[in-house]
Length: 545
Ligand code: C2O
Image 1 (cartoon, helix red, strand yellow):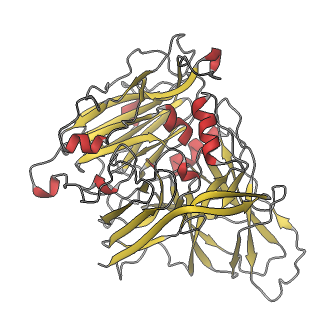
Image 2 (cartoon, helix red, strand yellow):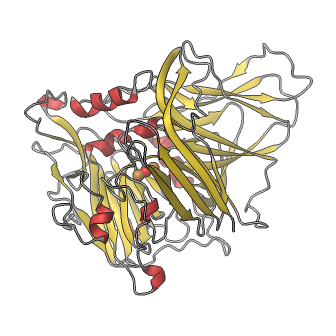
Image 3 (cartoon, rainbow, N blue to C red):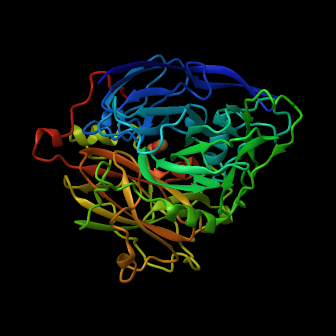
């Protein structure tokens, strides 16, 4: 195994898109940021130097960080932020993981511009469980705001209204030809009759995205850095925080046109959304194809709220579950949880004008608890140094506080409880969590992301979860394993994982607006008996609050 050293310098850079130039935060002046390349088993050391006026942290989304949440990155959960002119070294080893992941800022909404790919190749000599591609291409989807990100955040947080929406989606940072005044288009040059591996990443702030390439099929082979049983589709759905590797085999004959690849949003929420389409060009390289005025074929993408496409797509995802890549699904469960996830409101603070329903402030919660981040320390430091008093309590509820028909008409008084409650799990607990979307402020799909683990998606459905009949339909053989699960709009998803990674681990909706409204919670996994089952001590340069 090798050691991969990187330095990330965070600072302002002028970037122009859609004829707007703005000074925005980037890593090493790049947008999207640099790619981390490594192999399974490598040690990755990234020195993050903050030259910006903002506090920052970086999260390595999907990296398990075994015994080592100190390198995980969510601000005030596992570390205090890196302040201006300070640095912090993220040092972690890639144990038993290979595939496509992403890194991003994990404080406020800074991941709007601070994000990039992580590519972990298999160990030397270990082939992919699918035909070797001729070339590997990374496609990272994102959002572009003409406005300053700070202004977008405060608009969403101070007024308690929905956020200003983005002005464009982007493919590798570029909006593409379907926007006004867009001069930048991503172009993928391909040879005929050749197989490519596309490493797709959704780094958008607030939108799940459909992606398709006109007149071409995609074969899904991996999600969230875990191999799946290959299947072929015209369109994929990818939520923020998710990654999807697909094989693209180009047409054997010289085509008579160029093809657009495009991404557009999936959204069932009530507010206003950026319902635009970003596009790039798939261009065949061929001496016979030198006519620059060829017609562009456009892919057909599902509608904004096509939940049935999403449900069918996610049902097709299955773990490879073979001898070499087994699916270690917990067959029995030690602890069951039922969590409602969704929106809600809280009373408007005295000094504010709130634009939520009836003058209230928008909020979001898990089991009606709207998680409030500490400010003077991180949860992990408070836990490790046994100074939890005044920082967090351990009474996070196992079940919703007041049952109702979660996808029917919600009760009237649904103010959330603002709290900092965590759930403590003994080491190696086999956990089942049913995540139930609620209809408070409307049903909506939530991509729930768990740090430190991958979970198996053993079941999903619409309406209210029925604990008497639904478990008999669970797939405990080859359920898809991933780090970000879509909770169906107006439905539920059941996930299982084994709490075999000691430390403090964040779980939250990966739509940043919902995270900041409180749709987040924390698991603390206690140490086991063996040295390899204990939380490591913090590095000496851990930032101070
Ligand atoms: Cu990719 Cu806690 O996030």
